[in-house]
Image (cartoon, rainbow, N blue to C red; front, side):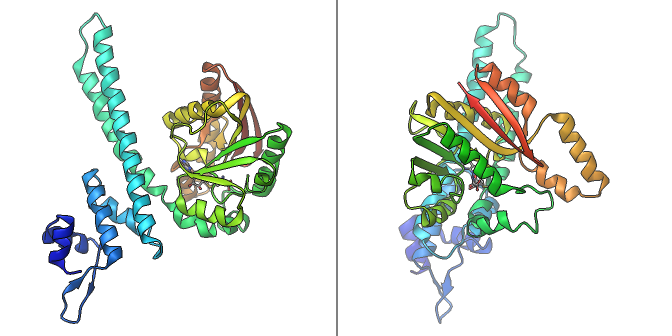
Length: 349
Ligand SMILES: C[S@@+](CC[C@H](N)C(=O)[O-])C[C@H]1O[C@@H](n2cnc3c(N)ncnc32)[C@H](O)[C@@H]1O
């Protein structure tokens, strides 16, 4: 399709098309006479770009997203997926700002003394700034789609795993599966299920729903386990079933959430559970901040700043703080260290 037809169809200017081309976002093929010729995939991508821009994403971020999702096949599904992700992220960001504004107004209404408006404005600025910073991390999360095909190999052949993050991976999954079976579970939700390594084989005997934010991970899991059900979703999504699940489980995924998000995720996970239900989380954690600092100092001393950055780029749970939170919502918590950074934590109402 020629430039002027594209402009007419999508209601954009040729100048915008040139800018997207300069950024390497949508680069059409050229005809023999050097005219641009946009194909169907270019049009899908342009629609995606228009929506992402509408949502306030910068061209740099858009380029980053598109590069991380360039698989060459299924372009239509991918462009829908990308748009869905961006809309979800925006809704989450708006929710953060909405809650900050609402709390500020409530504070003014509740207080008899004159409020310090600077502090309130500062809180709003902070939430806007945090959204921006967290968006960077959210963009990084897209790495999971790229990792999906080699994930199973990566966790088992760990020549690059200097921190030993996936030491005893299979043993830990075995242990978590054992606990699910001992609980006499019938219905299980596995959040951040990845390629289905934890619950895939359980789906032969029980009702298992795997939830993951990465479409590519789910597609890999579906190839391996045809009895398991899958849902594209997030820890932060409202539960799709309530009070009806025996176990909500998650392995090696919780550390992608910051503290605030973890609290929201726990609330959601509890809503899935029936009265006797249980949450099981196996993930990277530190007992407390002292242990975290000790690890940081050790790695600095060994001149392994790059390894510390691997840890610092994610949100390893501070267990003592987490424990306080779980007690504050009147739940019971049991925790057990397995190997290196990995702990298994159980939470019950
Ligand atoms: C390291 S993999 C672990 C996969 C699997 N649980 C396992 O043990 O093999 C982490 C998975 O969590 C998913 N994930 C990360 N953040 C998530 C979120 N906020 N909501 C849902 N899934 C998430 C990723 O897409 C990825 O598939």
